Length: 296
Length: 175
Image (cartoon, rainbow over all chains, first blue to last red; front, side):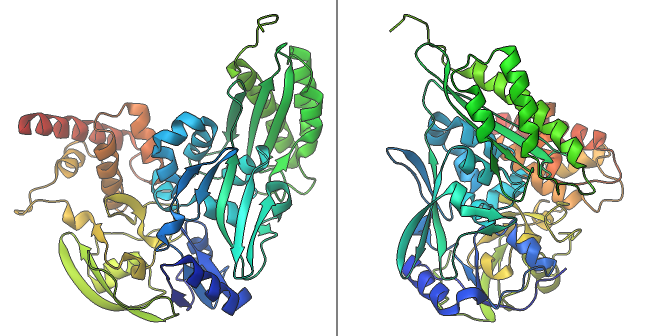
């Protein structure tokens, strides 16, 4: 349970880091909070030749509000977000989601961007980014590109990030003030990876019907999954009991046929998806800012 | 804290670090793959920090890193360069009198075999610093990152409650 040998560098400037990434290509891996990466090293599931520690690149420690989204830099810790009064006020769903990540000791080191880059399908932040239609910023010596969440996650621990590229920022879109949201996950023990998690953001129109629904799940497939079919079913409705029931029923399909392991069967995960869908839809809709008919 | 003078923008396999542990400064040259937990135990002989799972699940190796509770098995010694670490050895007072948290664990039987205890004490220290008056639910939630296989947690929770009371009273006295 000791990491294999590697070469280590820890530059203070982003440009230097990008040069190293370009130089060593697939042989170099980025170390941010290390809360997923160091276990992989300790278990010898990863053995990179070079490790690029980005913890001293202080220019990447930011949390910034932009017109359309909250921007989080590559070494902003999960705890830093959790404690940020700004984020508590402006993005309560992000706070709620982060509180479910691991334990306090993990969040003290773990970064938001690192969790997204790691792309564990059972992790909370990739699912949230998918749910909200978020984006990531990848940088390399060749320049930068912005990638949409649904195009970023391609499978288990796999993304469209190229060799020589580094994820430097994650962008969580703002939620409309009148929208209601909910996140619920089911884990056998507190702090464990959840078996299944569900999240919903429901925005009411002026006539108090649902004008847009964003629904996503974690732990149901090789990547976080957005449930477009469920969203379409909810849009235009008032989330009456029958609609919620129908949505909970068709949501079962998001669970992949191969999602069986020692922790749960496919059928069990489908049951969880169904029940969690029911709960998040009810809670999110209750939390919306009710739009009174004729009040405009 | 010392400004790092060496150039780590190039790759190295060894590095000279300067670490403050429990108020004492140590300088050592370490291989970069050395875990912080092993550095504390083997190089500094601070064997109170225990090593259980070595992949961040059990919480035995929890130490304070610049005041924040972290898993020392998920960090490299080289990352502690210029940083301040507190381990269980730094908790007792100058005359070896127990820290109020340790005293509370002793009185309330908050340990049996004691393997998980150093990690739990460090976690509780960070917890009570941030929430001096936690509810039982909060205590249980914050303890969830530390596994104990003996006690059934009941007496650990009682110990934390007592420690919180005593630390609160101490604070009032000071004021």
